[in-house]
Structures are given as structure tokens and as C-alpha cells.
Length: 445
Image 1: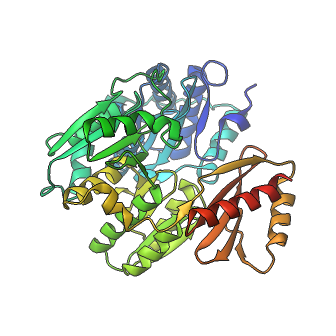
Image 2: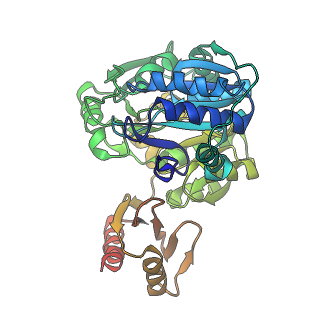
Image 3: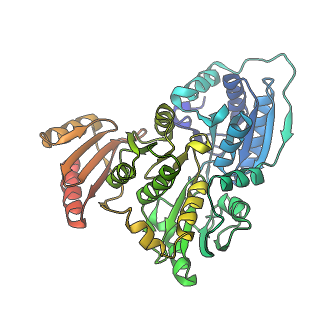
């Protein structure tokens, strides 16, 4: 019997190919998902060796319960969000995102690209898998093949004015992932000289892992930007739903600065709108949104919380520290490609270098996320909170402590491991380092 608690995560299904997930399991998930949504399902898959056969198995599961399938073939995760939103169908993408080559998985959404997480479908799918897929006696559903990639690209370009941008040299690291398939389609015809790195689709990731959140995986892009004199560097993860940015000097741009930059652009179109950000995004985001007449709204880390608060407040945009960017005009779903187009439009409409453009959105120094293994997460958080008694604190997601003069830290527990994740921000590097070291000493003692 499979340990479904290991496979069915907070937001998706993921595991080791052959050991934890195989075609039979994926077929059963497809059947359980069809029972959950009761409607047509659009399916996309990435470039991993197991992804195409898994997509076929998932389609077989869906049709076995009488629901139809629209098979969209190779694509990024945000392509399935486009399909679900544009066609008002449910969606599934076979991908393990940024995970190593041995993994694969399934991301799901309901019609309109509504998220499927533990509380919105995954727990129910697990119950169905545990109790057994019921026999369906009606006619099976049909499978229709449809290539939506060019429609998706045209839709993205309708959302961003790129008509007057100057020519730009853009280095793009696709990490042998789906960015290598999608970037040429989305960027086609724009005044961009694309310098490609690792555009060959290869789910064994022969050059480096497809996880740009790890600085080690940005090194090749940084080197290439400097080598060719690029105006900007873009790095996509394996399923190309996240985008990270490198400036013309080869320095990584904080995702928080990108959140603030895009927020100001969206507020120019929708004055007074809400902008959603999570608890470990820079304080600068809230300040800049307020300065531009918007309403900043803070939420927990994770796309389910982001999308829920965006829906509640009809927010025009939302962004996370992890390179996920959500747009109301994209059914509140996250799309790194649309974020990249916004940054290119902002850069291309000015004669300034990217480093100068983002400087106004970068006000503080951040530690990055630091993990500590602890024996008792709850007790450790309580002890830290008591230690900072008198400071302003909140428990929206873990423990956030405000220390004055813009300095703060957040300690957030992992969903799956006995870990606390520390993020610190302050106005200068010395203050940040002092707070970081003090808090780490308290956590690890």
C-alpha cells in the first residue's frame, strides 16, 4: 500500500518515479480527479522522461469516469492555467517543477484555474484513492488534442504593452526545462535578441538543477550576462511557472523588488487596487504599494493563501519571495512568463540599465531563508516569542517579530520536516547580520 501522506503534498502530488508513483497510480489519480471535478480536463506535461506516458495514463483515468480530455501536449504549468481559465475546464499538468530528475508529479486546478490544495480537493482525492476507484458503467469520455501554446502567448502579450520597447539583449537560462519550449513562442516577433542557455528539453537536467531559487543554479546565467553584455538575464524553473531575474552586471534581482515593480505597473492601470504579498516578502513592497495609492494585503506563504486573498479582495496582483507572481487578468494564477514580460516592458521603455531601474524598489537587506532543525517546533517558537516580549509580533504564518527601524524577522515551520525557516530583513547588512545571528543562536541552542 502506498504511503499517500508522502505523495499528496499541500498543493500537489509528487514522488519518486517507479518507487512511489507509476502509470497505474497516475491513472487512478486521473479517475479520482474526474470524480472530484465532474467536467472536462485539460492536460499538459513537461519534458521529464516519464511525463508523456504519465499524461496518457492520467487521461485514461479521466475518460474512464466518463469525462472528456483536452490533451495540450508539452507545455509549462501556466499553460494549463490558461487552458482552465480560457476554456473554463479543469486542468492537470504532469510535472515535478524544480525537483531533481528522479521525481515527477501532478499539479491540479478546477475550472477558471481555481486552486486545488489539501482543503480544496487533494484530501478528497486521497479518500477516493484509499477507498478504491468506483466502477463507471457509462460511456467513456473522449480525448481531443489541441495546441494552445500560441493562443496562450498571444493572450499574455495582450496584457502587457510591448509595442514601444527598445531592442534588448536577453540571456535566458531554461535549465533544460519548459522555458526552452515556451520562451521562443512567447518572445516571437519582439525586439529581443535572445541568448539561450540550455534550451534543449532534457528532464535529466544535465547542466544544473532547474531550481533558480538556489544561487548555485544562477551562476551560468550570471556568467553569460556578463560575457555577452546582456541587458537582463531570466532564469526559469523546470515547469517555467517561476521566473528569476539577473541585472546587467550579473547580480540577482530580489523577487521582492520584482513584486514592487510589477505592482506599480498594475496600480497604474487599476488605481487603488489591492496587492497581495506574503509574510516574508520585503517590507518595501507594502511601503511602495501604499505610496502608489494601492492597498497592500499580507497573507501566509503558499499559492492557495495568495489566490484566496486575491479573490477575497479582488486584488489586481500578488507576488511571493519565491518567484511566483499572480495576476487577476490571468485568473489569479501564477505565471513567470507574464512577470518576465512586465520586467522587459519596464526595462525596454527606459534608457536606464536594469540595476538602476530596480534600485528604487530595493530598500532593505535580506538574509535569505535559513533552515534549522529543531526537536520541538512549537516550543521553540514559544520560547523565541517570549524572548522578544514587548516587541510587536504576529502569528499569521509562524512567528513574525517587528524590531523597529524597518527590521523584522520571521520564523516559519516546515509543513513536512522538523525545521524552522528564518528570514531576516533590516536597513543595512550589519543590522541584518546581527539579528540573524542572535535569532539563530536562540533557535539552535
